[in-house]
Image 1 (cartoon, rainbow, N blue to C red):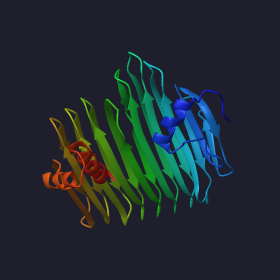
Image 2 (image 1 turned 90 degrees about the horizontal axis):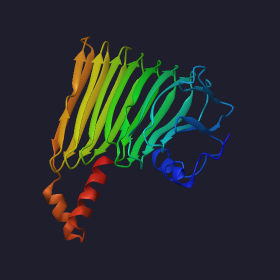
Image 3 (image 1 turned 30 degrees about the horizontal axis):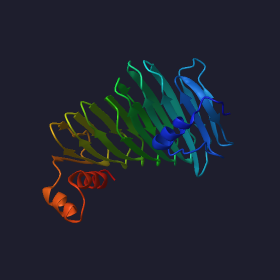
Image 4 (image 1 turned 45 degrees about the horizontal axis):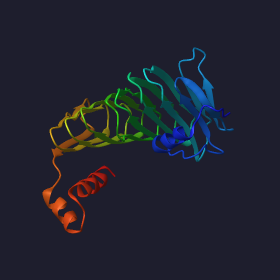
Length: 309
């Protein structure tokens, strides 16, 4: 179902945060705008239902579903709006699905706007789930996003999570907690850019509870101007498992970046590795690009884009 709440400007932002230049045909989607449902569609295999208490939605993927996508973006265009949404994803055994989320705050008013989303994934056995989440903000009054993600990955399932903050979020606190069953795999790719006086914090805890479970976290960020960032990923190995955490950051101007990768082994059969690096843009790279005709600003942009890709 589609109503007239979506404007041309909304589609521009939806394309940025959820790769939706237009309303998708044949896919499940739920578009939320300023606290209300703006558009929804379901398929034979993916159902979307409003929770009885109105706090959010349930996305239910049938067992055995293959090759489908579900879009669940959020738009905030009203100044002073502060909302919290709880969405549950129930993924049936053997399903293969891609979930495209994202939140865009376009605040041209004088009061700040904020969105807190709590996403809980309950993933069955033998599934493959890709979860893509992008955040973007516009306006000077304040754009706050505080996402919480809880993931329960079933036996022999794979959960791929791509999380990115494009630009314009004045403050964010990102909390992720995951529990991996036997043979489960989780791959996390986090990309984040801050500028101005923006502040970003990311906490992540992953419990490898099942035998032969595995985890990979790769976080890359760029901190510009006087912005600040803090990353705290933690892997807890409770059985025979493997995990690798990597945090890399480019620091510029007068920004500050902190990284605290943490590992904990509660089994002699757990193999867990972490590494972190923070540094400035390489001067030799800058000079090489400038000799090819790029300005200093253009050269910086090329290096940052390559680093985050």
